[in-house]
Amino acid sequence: MFRRGTTPTVIFTIDNIDFEKVTAIYITIKQGNYTINRDNNDIEVSVDEGKLRIKLTQEDTLKLRKGRVMAQVRAIYYDDIAVATDILYDYCVDVLREDVISNG
Image (cartoon, rainbow, N blue to C red; front, top):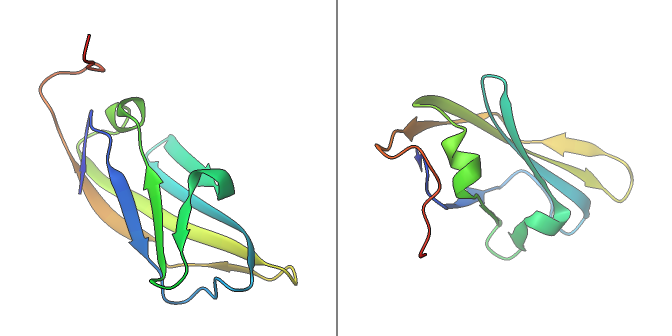
Protein backbone atom coordinates (compact mmCIF):
# COMPACT_ATOMS: atom_id res chain seq x y z
CA MET A 1 0.00 0.00 0.00
CA PHE A 2 1.15 3.51 -0.81
CA ARG A 3 0.26 6.47 1.42
CA ARG A 4 0.36 9.87 -0.25
CA GLY A 5 2.88 12.38 1.15
CA THR A 6 5.17 9.76 2.67
CA THR A 7 8.65 8.45 1.83
CA PRO A 8 8.18 4.70 1.61
CA THR A 9 10.75 2.11 0.70
CA VAL A 10 8.96 -0.11 -1.80
CA ILE A 11 10.13 -3.73 -1.81
CA PHE A 12 9.59 -6.07 -4.75
CA THR A 13 10.18 -9.80 -4.28
CA ILE A 14 11.09 -11.23 -7.68
CA ASP A 15 11.39 -14.91 -8.52
CA ASN A 16 11.36 -14.94 -12.34
CA ILE A 17 14.45 -12.82 -13.04
CA ASP A 18 17.96 -14.29 -12.93
CA PHE A 19 19.84 -11.48 -11.18
CA GLU A 20 23.20 -13.10 -11.98
CA LYS A 21 22.61 -12.28 -15.69
CA VAL A 22 21.15 -8.77 -15.27
CA THR A 23 23.07 -5.81 -16.68
CA ALA A 24 20.27 -3.24 -16.31
CA ILE A 25 17.09 -3.14 -14.28
CA TYR A 26 14.10 -0.79 -14.33
CA ILE A 27 11.09 -0.29 -12.08
CA THR A 28 8.01 1.63 -13.21
CA ILE A 29 5.14 2.72 -10.99
CA LYS A 30 2.16 4.17 -12.82
CA GLN A 31 -1.20 5.66 -12.02
CA GLY A 32 -3.19 7.32 -14.79
CA ASN A 33 -0.86 9.74 -16.61
CA TYR A 34 1.67 9.90 -13.75
CA THR A 35 4.73 7.61 -13.97
CA ILE A 36 7.62 7.06 -11.56
CA ASN A 37 10.67 5.46 -13.19
CA ARG A 38 13.69 4.15 -11.35
CA ASP A 39 16.74 2.45 -12.87
CA ASN A 40 20.03 0.84 -11.86
CA ASN A 41 21.39 3.65 -9.70
CA ASP A 42 18.11 4.08 -7.79
CA ILE A 43 17.46 0.39 -7.09
CA GLU A 44 18.95 -1.62 -4.25
CA VAL A 45 19.25 -5.25 -5.33
CA SER A 46 19.50 -8.13 -2.87
CA VAL A 47 20.44 -11.05 -5.13
CA ASP A 48 20.32 -13.69 -2.37
CA GLU A 49 16.80 -12.73 -1.32
CA GLY A 50 15.48 -11.88 -4.79
CA LYS A 51 14.40 -8.45 -3.54
CA LEU A 52 14.53 -5.00 -5.09
CA ARG A 53 14.10 -1.84 -3.03
CA ILE A 54 13.38 1.70 -4.15
CA LYS A 55 12.79 4.83 -2.12
CA LEU A 56 9.99 7.23 -3.06
CA THR A 57 9.93 10.90 -2.11
CA GLN A 58 7.08 12.93 -0.68
CA GLU A 59 6.86 14.63 -4.08
CA ASP A 60 6.49 11.25 -5.76
CA THR A 61 3.70 10.03 -3.51
CA LEU A 62 1.84 13.35 -3.40
CA LYS A 63 1.40 13.09 -7.17
CA LEU A 64 -0.40 9.79 -6.72
CA ARG A 65 -4.14 9.84 -6.08
CA LYS A 66 -6.28 7.61 -3.94
CA GLY A 67 -6.89 4.43 -5.91
CA ARG A 68 -5.15 1.63 -7.76
CA VAL A 69 -1.45 1.86 -8.65
CA MET A 70 0.42 -0.39 -11.09
CA ALA A 71 4.08 -1.43 -10.90
CA GLN A 72 6.38 -3.53 -13.05
CA VAL A 73 10.02 -4.61 -13.03
CA ARG A 74 11.91 -5.01 -16.31
CA ALA A 75 15.48 -6.13 -16.79
CA ILE A 76 17.95 -6.85 -19.54
CA TYR A 77 20.49 -9.65 -19.45
CA TYR A 78 24.08 -9.45 -20.70
CA ASP A 79 23.00 -11.27 -23.90
CA ASP A 80 20.36 -8.56 -24.70
CA ILE A 81 17.40 -10.67 -23.60
CA ALA A 82 14.74 -8.43 -22.04
CA VAL A 83 12.47 -9.81 -19.31
CA ALA A 84 9.60 -8.40 -17.27
CA THR A 85 7.44 -9.30 -14.30
CA ASP A 86 3.69 -9.39 -14.45
CA ILE A 87 2.11 -6.02 -13.72
CA LEU A 88 1.61 -5.73 -9.98
CA TYR A 89 -1.35 -3.88 -8.51
CA ASP A 90 -1.46 -2.02 -5.22
CA TYR A 91 -3.55 0.70 -3.66
CA CYS A 92 -2.81 4.29 -2.67
CA VAL A 93 -4.53 5.93 0.29
CA ASP A 94 -4.96 9.62 1.01
CA VAL A 95 -3.54 12.06 3.57
CA LEU A 96 -5.19 15.23 4.79
CA ARG A 97 -2.27 17.61 4.34
CA GLU A 98 -1.48 18.12 0.62
CA ASP A 99 2.09 19.47 0.79
CA VAL A 100 5.66 18.39 1.55
CA ILE A 101 6.42 18.52 5.27
CA SER A 102 9.84 19.12 6.86
CA ASN A 103 11.70 19.43 10.15
CA GLY A 104 12.09 23.17 9.79
